Length: 633
Image 1: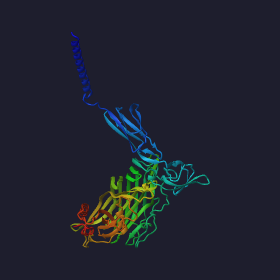
Image 2 (image 1 turned 180 degrees about the horizontal axis):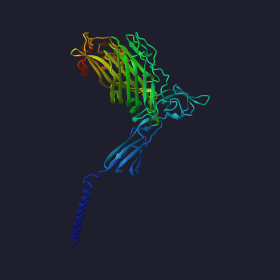
Image 3 (image 1 turned 135 degrees about the horizontal axis):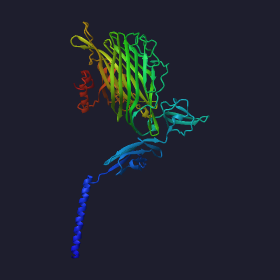
Image 4 (image 1 turned 120 degrees about the horizontal axis):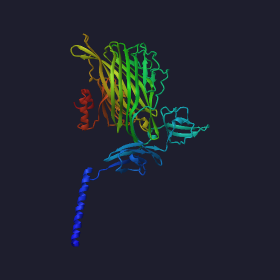
């Protein structure tokens, strides 16, 4: 055999060996679940670092199964790592003038055998070095913190311009947030600080917070003193009415360490309450309200989220949770063809029932929840009215404000119980509700109104009959007062949803044959009628604003009113051609927004104008209203 022939045989044997090896490897690959033309599958953990100032290094430690531990300073991806749960421990980053804290100090992610999991380290909370956190338990405050001058038995290093923050303590039940305006030592060596109220944006110029299911810090505040006067607020504004000495049970407010509270009063049926806001065109010698009690338990913050920066507030979202129990007994004498109204608030100031501390980095944000009872009764009666009514509700409600727009949050479970049926009346309503307000460092913030009530009305029926119905209802409103976020030079700003949630249920009805005496004719909603005061209309328009406006705005122009409607021309700036027209539905003294139209000079076919006119017509506004605003019939 020649050398050439031997080489050919060797090459042939090598090719056969390579082919056999390829077949074996392919079979193994198929058995493993993939083909040679497919890429191998793997897993990964992607760590993202967001909102850290340019040039700053993050301080993140990633820990996971099998002793996995890595330090991360910027965006990084870890490939082909053990499956399981990974935790990012996110530490603050110190800067030259401010420290940056994460929104959450720990974040978890689950890594599967295939695919990429993502975990985010969000550095959004900026704490300047001029923000000084003082230990509330060792504050050394001499006296209380009510005034602008604070005296500390402390060697705290403070300077003019610093913002001092402290949590809940013996001398700071609402926490403390102040800007330092002066610093000196007295002859005893104590630190004397001049201060003024600061805002959250002074202490935290940039922050994103999101807390869920927040429970109170500890026991509720002490009960109100037994000597506290009942119905001490309000103005006696009566016409031809007798206002006598109050005789009410005491104490009016009770709170418990388990988060329960009760506001109650038992009124002497022979008196009218001193200090009650009371208007009536006939003299009365008896209180219309025999007994009111309103209680709650398990108050909490279902959620509290906010996002703000140097330029202002971007978003606020909150929901208040509560189990509420309301009871009212009414006994009102006949007021033939007369109308009376009773309004009161109890107690005033409101009573704190829970305190919450939200830690934003090193900053304790203190939220105090307060409650009081707000009640109103009005009616035009032709016989004595008395009944006993109970309503219970489980509530989680609030709102979201973002970019000037409001979104309701509402979840209710409620039941009504009529303990004693009423006599009939021409028309009467009674509402007594719970105002739940939150204060941030003692400054007004988000609030929620829960108003159970009843309405009894006589209605005409066909076939010579009349019918009276008693309806039990639950009506709620939510709002935000932005004071805790606003600096001293910024205009006041509020947002409200006046009809967050409502429900009505017929509890009692009575039908009887009409008498020969003709019943009063129904009120024509389209009939011209006197207007409410200009201030009432101005406030109704102002409630619709979602952005700050100048003091004195809106400026009212021409008004026109009907029994069931009110229309007003107004502007944000005085003496301007740029005006809006607001139309309200009118129910006695209540004004409910219907539509706001923006006239466009010389553009009667403007799409927005035509749309708003159609909306007004869909509401079946009478001809006088559409003529006033300028919509064609």
